Image 1 (cartoon, rainbow, N blue to C red):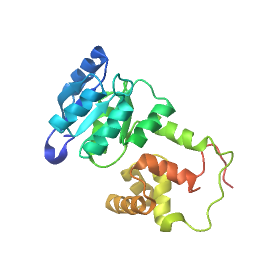
Image 2 (cartoon, rainbow, N blue to C red):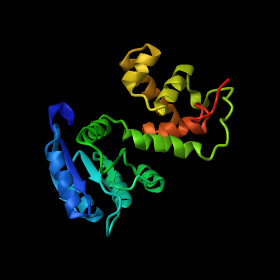
Image 3 (cartoon, rainbow, N blue to C red):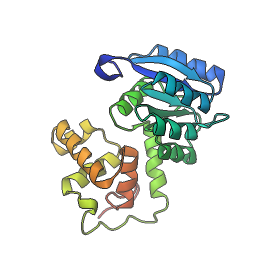
Image 4 (spheres, helix red, strand yellow):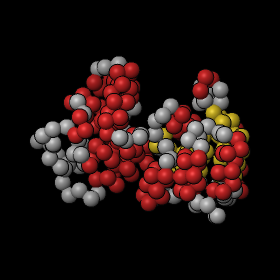
Length: 231
């Protein structure tokens, strides 16, 4: 299966300051279907310059790099070249780096021990307009957003931002980490209908991707934090 649009391979730039790691990632990507590595960068400055020159579909961006770190490079790429998506690929799955990268505009986040299939899936997801988050990272998102809350908030009497009951239901399932196909099966509706609901709720709430949808759902009390009992 091709990761790019129209059957063309997804054009990818790899940015990592460690030569051994960078070359290893390039070698791995070269073996994956649907991906073409068009360049590699040693730091954030070089990554931004390569994006301007090569106009890749996706950058796999390390966070800890000299001169210009991955977060700042991500911010510049997304501001100056909105047609290029960023997937953070890093050893450090700590919360601070994760949220800084997402806030800078990254649409995906993988650790460097991710398997080839995970990388292809993340690239495909971000090119399709979805968040390419590894399951472990999505769990960390859920944990982070629920930590400040001592108890589950009371369900709002009215749904926020004009959400319909069905849109709120879909949003809650998105926050649980379900794919569009899984949501369709759970609600007994078609995948196209799920996509329509997601597009509508994203527009109403102002979230850009599933990572932000998770945060929105918990902040608005649309889903209970893990470990709380509902009677």
